[in-house]
Amino acid sequence: MTAAPATGTTAPGTVWDGLVGQPRVIETLRAAASGHGMSHAFLFTGPPGSGRSNAAIAFAAALQCEQDPPGCGACHACHTVLVGSHADVAVIRTEGLSIGIKQVRDLVRRSALSPIGNRWQIVIVEDADRLTEQAFNALLKAIEEPTERTVWMLCAPTVEDVLPTIRSRCRLVSLTTPTAEEVAAFLVRREGVDSALASYAARASQGHIGRARALARDEETRNRRRAVVAIPATLTSLGRCMQAAAQLTQVTKEEAEAITTELDAREKAELDAAYGVEQRGRRPREYAPALRDLEQEQKRRAKRRQLDVVDRGLMDLVSVYRDAIAVAAGASGALVNEEIRGDVELLARASGAEANLRRISAVFEAREQMLEFNVQPALALESMMLGLVAPELRSSGVGR
Image (cartoon, rainbow, N blue to C red):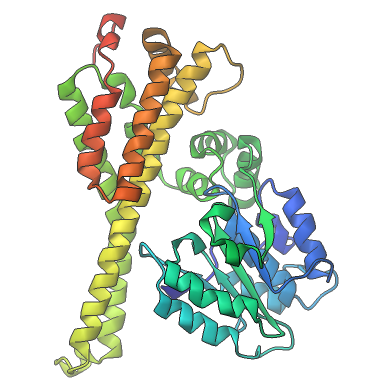
C-alpha cells in the first residue's frame, strides 16, 4: 500500500469540474465544505469508474481551500491537494489484493496527528472494500473516537462492502454511473478528444471514466478491446472456444504486463539507489529482505492487475450479449458496440434473447470463480467459453 498522488489534472475551473454526471453529489459536498452537514467520516460509494476517489479528492481540496466559497481549484491549497502534494491529505491506494492490519495501524497513527496547516488532517482510503476484517476492526476505533480535526474518507463500490459498524459512523455519498453523453462531453472538454472518438470511448467504457480516458488516448487499448468484442461471433465450435480462451488470456496478460513492467523497473531502481547498490557495487545486509518484500508486493500487484484486466474483458463480452438482447427486443438508441452492429444483429437473429442471457450468466460465473474462489484465469476462461459456444451461428453464414 502506498500514499500516492491524486489521479487526473487540476480542474480548469473549480475542484468539482472533474466529477462527471454527479450534480447531486457536488451539491452535497459543496454544502459540507461550507459547514452544512460536515462529518468526521464519509463513505463514497458508486460503480467502478463512477469517480468515487475523484469525488473524495475534490472534497478534500474544498475542505483545505483558502477561498470562499471553498473549492476554487486555483488557490495553493486546492492545487496541492489535486496534484497529490498537500501535507495534510493522504490518498492511500493498494495495488495488492487486500489492505492488512499493519497498513491500517499506520493510517490510524497518522490520523491522530494534528494537521500541519490550520484546517484538516484528511485520510482518503481508496478500495476500502479490500480491507481485511482485522483491518476494519483496527480502523473502527479511530472512526469511533476521532480526533477533532481529522476527516476520514472511505471509497467502496457499495455500502455492503464495508462493515456495518464502520458505515453506520460515516456519512454516505452515493455516486451513479454517468451517461455516455456526459462522458463524451467530458472527454471533449477536458481531454481535447475528437467528438467521434469521444463518443466511441464513452459508449465502450459503459460509464467508466478511467476506461474512457484510456480508450480515447491509446490505440493499443482500443485494438485490444476490439479483439475481445469480436470473440462472441466466432464461437461456432468447441475448438474455436478453446482458441478464444487462449486469445483472451494472452490479450489480458499483455495489457496487465504493459501496466506493471515499467512501474516494477522504476521501483527496483529506486530501491537500488536507496541502498547505494549502484554506487557501492555491493549489497548491504538490509538490501536482501527489502528486495524480497518488494518482489512479493510486485507479484501481488501483478496478480490484481491481471484480474482487473480480465474482469474488464469479461464486462466487454457481456456488453456484446446485452446489445444482442436489446436488438432482439427492438430497443431504440445506439448500442454499446455500435461499430460491430453486424455481429450483434447476427447473434440476436441466430440465438435469441434467452440463449444470450444464459451466456451472460456464464460470464458472471467465470468472474465469480476468479474473484471469489481464486480459480486461475486460464481455467475459468476455458470453462466460460464452453458456455458461450454458439453452433447455430454456422448456419447463419458465419465464415470466420
